[in-house]
Image (cartoon, rainbow over all chains, first blue to last red; front, side, top):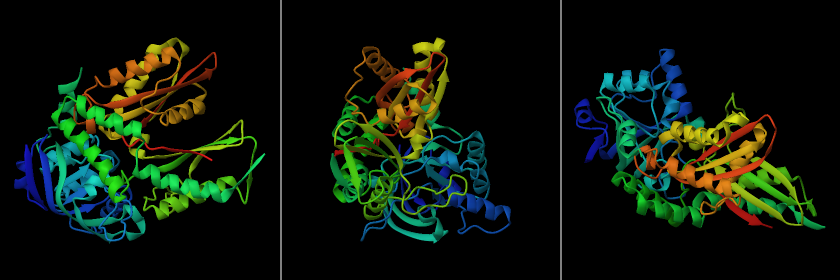
Length: 182
Length: 280
């Protein structure tokens, strides 16, 4: 089913999203990938606060290529989510509203998604030029020294994603494969 | 004897890094289009259409096809009658990469040490494979490699008794385990034989062969066809979201090996299977 949502959003919105839904996201999302996750995790361990309040926010696992003059961002597709799995349950327990990436998640992440009523979206891997067109603006808000791995605040308009793991724990990567197995 | 100035190497490598990251080869584009016509899943067809649109946007607006513009893997086949002048060849290759990634707005994805992990900020060093061949030309292949798929690659040190069935199981296992992570539809490079490192290199090089060409060895050609069909029965599909197009091609290279061994390397590559070839 095709749906349009605005980010950030509340738990009510997540309950309406189901594994397999094609969703267009408009609003504000944040990027963070390997190095930024490690830093955020270490900050939490030390009792420090995160560079932004992640409650109800969507985090996009993405490190862009540099922007050409006059453009908000370069190529901007998803990276493999499983590398963030170690750090993810802690962020979900702080109220992280959703994640955009690609690829499998661990059972621990899936359980944390269900426990917190969150959602895992996939964007199409390797479609970074196309996806960059749905990004209106980009601003580094933390960890500038990490270059492409810095945390960015993005304004997006009709950013296309697919619900992979919904708040009930349904997983499209498992169910869809069964349907087409020869 | 022919003399080649290193400046010529720098210039060509620079241009090739940029070209490879913005345009796929014609055989790859054709394979993606063909997949769009045969894919059984509606969502799969939608994803394949997005990938075609993505290639168009990348070329038209000069945006890299994928934000992971890779670690630069470079094959240098150098004629033995060539003399290089003006500096070190390895330095020239890396300078070409440095200039290409800077001027081409490509992402710098290389860390200087695998444990300390500080970004080198210019995407160097490249991974360079030198080969000395006959003649007085230099054949350069620039193949930027993204790590979503690289991370899903495998090496299997099989026993000779495992035979061809063992090889098939190894390749299918690698593809199944990679699932959505390797950005399907994938191209599967397979190396069979040699030693531990040689078979990995065979697999990497297999990815640079056009996807519409098969091995000249009859049993290898059959194996390529059978494995492709088997992989496309896995159900993984475009984006790993289900479908009948999981791989666009299986390319296999073989090499003599030891009486005690049967090494098999599976180098996964996403649908952004980039390479650019020039002969100078």
